[in-house]
Image 1 (tube, rainbow, N blue to C red):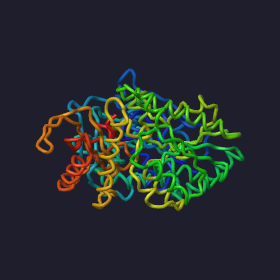
Image 2: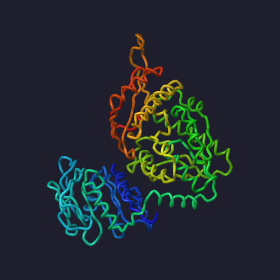
Image 3: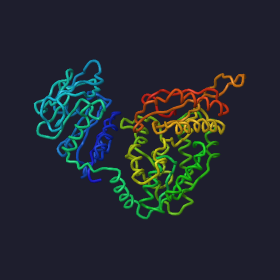
Image 4: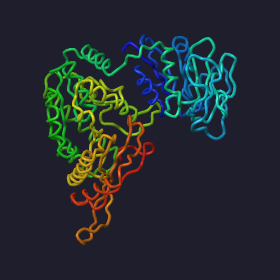
Length: 505
């Protein structure tokens, strides 16, 4: 890549959305912590400052010296970023009283290249509890609302702008145009595409890996699959893929995955490790402990397989950006651990290769299609690394795995046959640690409950529950109860993310 926009992350949940919007404009964006600016990187064309959960008045608020950044690059500051720069320049920041949240009518009050071509009045999305109440003479107001007179400003004599609204939000009507204008100001060529990513990544992998041998953790999902094909394109026979059956895969998935990859020419070693994982997970109910046991199991299995192979120097993983974000944010808050994020190379004495680590899920799919992979591999729903281990709440037993596998198989098969599979981002059956009374063949039963989960999403950072037809849910419920021994009740999860996660654990 010969150009990029750097997004300095001050901890906002919308930071990733900013990055996505820039990439949708065919420009590579890279999100870095607010204090990790890549000084000396000649490919940086401009800088965006994100919003933050903090107030600029908070003692613990993130602070950064922007003197060398503002002098060298066009800067667009959003929310907290806008207030931070304004306060540094001498503006007064005051509490708004009730939090401002939602759409407001934005009026462009002055000619400015950032607002070039924007309609005079449009809807914009706001979310703040403090506002800029006065501007010093070198900050010129360029847009306002009825309740926020200083919604956007430009610093006189330099290409630095601050906006109180969120141009990345879909509810901001002119947001995409404004971001496009910013890229024009940065003189971006906008040539970042799936084809260019493949070309540059393959070239970089060839240079980085040379003749070194690589072992890859293949899960059968989209991420590891695309990573494998990308690496195979770069290093060919020097890549060995290992697919572990930890006993927590979907029904028949181990066999199906091995068949799926025959056409790709990948060297895949299948490892049956079910008994090992069942033994180590016996009696464990805490979700984080289960994740850690499964993660350690992967480490041990791959370490063993790597030692069987000669001269392995790299461990490749299909880690994507949301994995990293959810494992640890700029604020240090851990949402949940991911088995494929961090820690493995230290144990295995291998260097780490993650060619997809800065991509979102939809971008990974585009890369897969660009690589010529079969659509059914690309369109597969995400499936968690710990597999059914985090879809079985409570302890893990082979019988519980059987129940979860059979219920999931019925659910997913019916989604496909009903033409609903591709309308859903992710779906699965969750076995709850709840038993309830039922009646089967005129006899009282006391059996398990299955929760069906289906969500729509773009990048897994947010998700909404899928409005599946009632008739479909009724059919699936009946089929599960009639065919899965040990289940007498099925419920449907209508929670969105946030506050719920997509997976239950």
